Length: 305
Image (cartoon, rainbow, N blue to C red; front, side, top):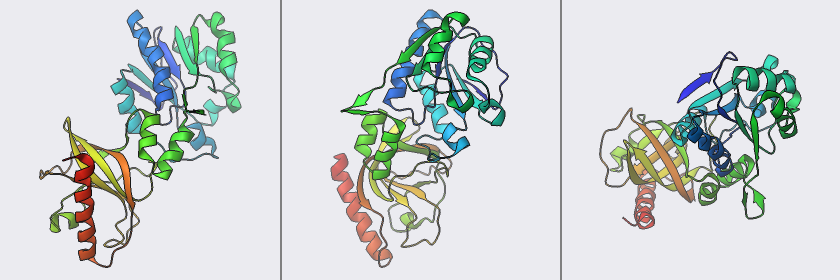
């Protein structure tokens, strides 16, 4: 996948463009993206046009915690089959672009858009005044076909990034999975921790999430880890390990069943399946060890291993 970032100077041949925020890349987003991916059958490149930083971060007033970080989002788009990702720089100059000029300059002249897909709530240009009505109005002028995609619902509620964020913040990982179409996860490189787990006979894989990453409640989760193309059952603690640490750094620490490889420096994905219990402070290492042993035993029952 080609990535165009940190520049407004780019030119494409006639392509199928999806424009939007894509915060979290939930089921509603993948439904939208399916329309431009379908256009690849007609020889068009599938292009995602999104904004970086997001409008909520740039203008303030919204949560800056990201359901998917910039790197996670890139990997998800590539996995879905997107050919080109444009991370359009949002700054004082670009944010002041009149909506009609935005369509003319970027969508028509620089990208030669042939097919455009967007959600019903799409906004762009000065004060977000560009919308679906303007995209439809200008379609004939600039020779693109426009498809406005209806929202998806779970029950009677629209699937949205706000909905996903609420469920993650509550620790309802099964519901988050239903909205995302995949498990909520953390990506990163395995780093060296305090080695306490190894000393207790329960070695763990540690990764430290980016500061922008949305965190679920601190505590223990049934989980699984993707490593080198394989999937391993595990149990994960998210938190600061108050029994043994005085640091504010949040650690995503995972014990894998029947696993004893040295994988420091490896890239992993830790997926959260279900919340088990909140983080707590224990009266010493022995009490902590006893609880960890119970967690691991109950995790075996959860995973049926």
